[in-house]
Image (cartoon, rainbow, N blue to C red; front, top):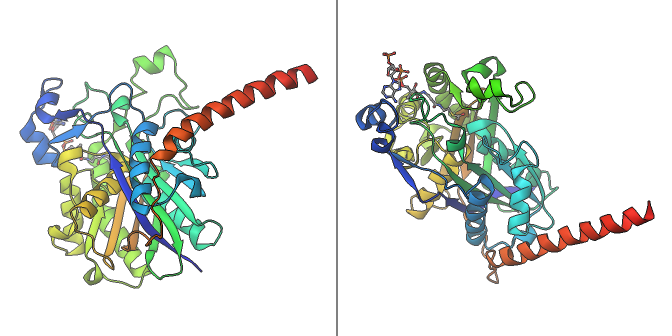
Length: 367
Ligand code: ACO
């Protein structure tokens, strides 16, 4: 049975930065309150012409560069997102088209901030089963589009960005060692974006009632998160036959520094073992774990053989954890340039549209 290794990683955040001071000009809050209660100092906000797919493409190309893998070699793309570009088509399909992943099946996975762990687990299972060899998993968000910038309870928390992993099959032991996934829909109301789906399709009333904005019971989500983070980590470690003593790094979902500190206490682990960057990005939902991983990898913190726990929670309610033995890229004989496939991808996309148009004309004649 092949093992599923993380062989590439990439991240991208939009350039514009929104500081706590900037937000204090929009709602009744201040830098000190936000830092004390959340640890967040600033977050990146997508420009008008940036979308989950465009952020994801930047992160994906970087991940493919690290893995030295051509997009045409990908069998599967899973995009975890809580702020999809459309209800359909899937954001994953837009990414597949833009990077030129011509043979990949692509779909979105919705498990809110736990989505990246769930998606990585699904891709790893597909690799472990032998049905695919190469997968791209992406977490990408422009939650700033769904935040009520007049609501100080939520607008201070979220930021935009994308992170991606390439997963590849290898006979060498390691990679994804275990994963646990949990859900509790009885807490669905605690964190929700109720408008725009089938239950509350867009109407003047839903707009007026603010149903198209994130709605959150912050205290309830906080209590839930502090309950599940430590427990899920232990569960995933036990499933891998490991204990906290074997772990070099915990990479948690970056929602709130206080939640991470509580998890550290529960696990009786020093906070220095936690990768933390919530201060610079806020809560980027599905993108937060891969973004934190990329930064740790770039700083040289993640060493080959390190045991790492990814752990997250989110709307749903959902939560999960994963244990990984860090390996890095598979040594390659020749260098590929994934970024060059983008140009061809644009041409290919145009050609396929033209072909469909011509086919449409011909079939009309036949009818
Ligand atoms: N600035 C100043 N005061 C504020 C602000 C603000 N931005 N927001 C709330 N307050 C006020 C409240 O109105 C309240 O005032 P009151 O006592 O007069 O009523 C007071 O501060 C305390 O509010 P609490 O809600 O008790 O503050 P708390 O310490 O719980 O912190 C927070 C709020 C930061 C939202 C916290 O509850 C939290 O982080 N919860 C988890 C949220 C989260 O992680 N969500 C994402 C989940 S992942 C996903 O799926 C997307």
